[in-house]
Length: 104
Image (tube, rainbow, N blue to C red; front, side, top):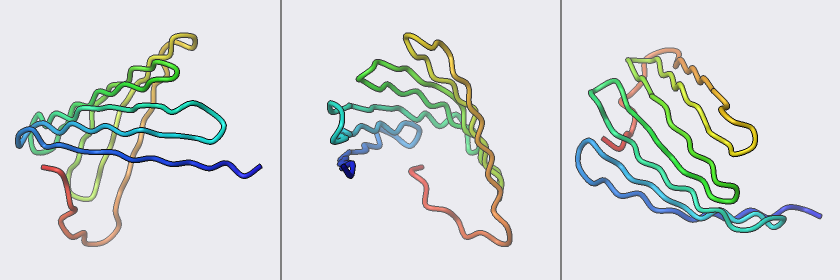
């Protein structure tokens, strides 16, 4: 059986510092999941992020850092059974980069 995935979402910029996002995610082999998140821009380079996922209930939070061609995210997710799951994402863009489209 080939899995079928559908998702639709919305993003709303409350202010120049706060972005709220939500979507509904449906996989053919499981119940629909609602994902919601908030991105708070602390300053030009640092963002605080928090999110929630239903089915099963999971809370995630972390920080994002963007400077020139370099970006990093440090996150952790809380699962009711597994506990904390930390994560790290690093990105470097080679060459000159045009200003990226960002929410803020």
